[in-house]
Image 1 (cartoon, rainbow, N blue to C red):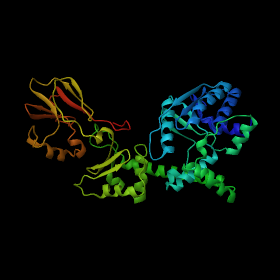
Image 2 (cartoon, rainbow, N blue to C red):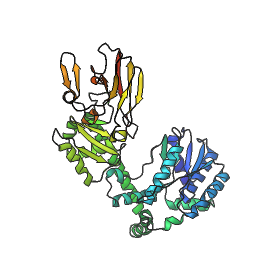
Image 3 (spheres, rainbow, N blue to C red):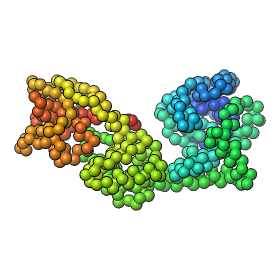
Image 4 (tube, one colour):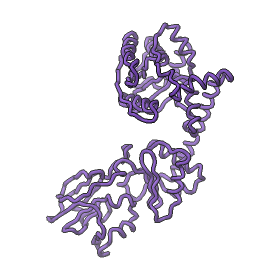
Length: 438
């Protein structure tokens, strides 16, 4: 076996029991070599079922011929191929939009625990670190590309990161492989191409070991990022504790636990917590965190981020997105027992049991609403919600039941959600966030 094949085999050892390996096949040099290497390895050893996927972005006329090239290559290697046609959304960065469309297609294609194998190599790793450095990335970004990460229901794995492009080119020539040369790779209007064609050659002419050294730095930064994540997990253990409302299972944190940390540790903990929820804000935008944290007790500050927003209520931080950022439609509906209703932009509500006969109406809080509580008389809902410390963003969403225009039940609030004997109860399932957290 060649050194490249040995390194590939070793890199993929942790995933030998995966249900399938799928190569992201552009038809270029790198992915062509990766597919050929895997097909060669499959002739020597028992591997998971091997397949390939080619993404057609529809961005240039030359690309129309590439699916046929990929079909011919896969047929020669007896590897099943799937062609996916995607639409690239218009935007400021064509590179990023194409990448987003491509990876969305990859994620949709993967089954549970299957691998998507991509052909990035050592030079790609060095370019990624330099590119992110020029964009002002932090430690997490400068750790560059990990060997593996979650993608859809499976995993994305980069088994060639220890190989150089020269090694892949030598392998391709030795085995007389043919590949596609993408004309867009010569277009230096794209930042990545400019870096590859202008900056990297200049660096290598002065420092021949530049790629090796930059990749080493990426490994050091990856280790540092791991340590920062471990520190964040320790801080989260104190801040990420259950609140008083188990039915309100939105992501939330105890604010005083964060206030006790230094500013850098606060930001580190929040980055760790927010990472699966939204894109990270740039350095200047972190002023929104300070405003949220330091606002007066009776204020209702909001920190708006790319995919949602943070709210503060009763010394807790709450992450809201999806329907939580939309106004619920006005609600006034006659209801019966044992009934469930979908609430526009506000989850669903159900009545368990059968209330007594009467003119029952479902709705939301209105100014001046009162509720008769045993032993306490009529209580104003505004003051009642204050006493119970109901988060402000929830109060106008809580479904109410009225009988003859009087509030007699409030969903989910213990002792107020229905009959005292439990014969009927009003239950609310709050809306979900975009990320599927509910």
